[in-house]
Image (cartoon, rainbow, N blue to C red; front, side, top):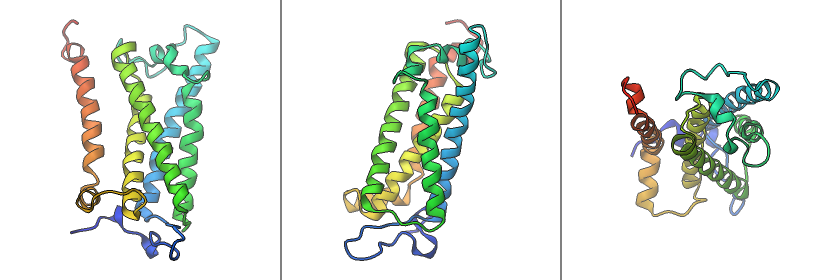
Length: 216
């Protein structure tokens, strides 16, 4: 079975420090993936936050990403779903995605993290991917509009969750049948590609009439 760069670690960073220590590093590729996806999330959250402030100052403000009746960030920002926790959602994104960047940079520097830390990342990214899945449903089937910056954050979160899961499977922190584990480690790119592809198809079919120049 071949092993990709995401499953290897430069200088054996993925090895445990010692029996029972549970301290594990990550490959350079995995660390870079965390930094890149975290940066994607921060960028999306930052732009949406700035536009939200402008919208609060001027209710008639039209965000630059409001391109048509479907791709309309303004409709998303004005919705109740945009402030689930009592403040704009992207503010949470600035904190959480920023933390992911910091973890990625720490792994790049050779840091080894204990088992509880990795499981904490698993729980955090699980919450994140669950939250964006709920937002996807709200966007497509309740609000009826799409935000391109939100889509960028969706993709970043899905990829992040999938590869944190792969890392924890490889380290043995998540129990799984050996066949399933080997399959996911070998074809780690399949789940995020299929996941994002399904979302793309849902977006395409939801507004097929618009993309094809028809009427609803």
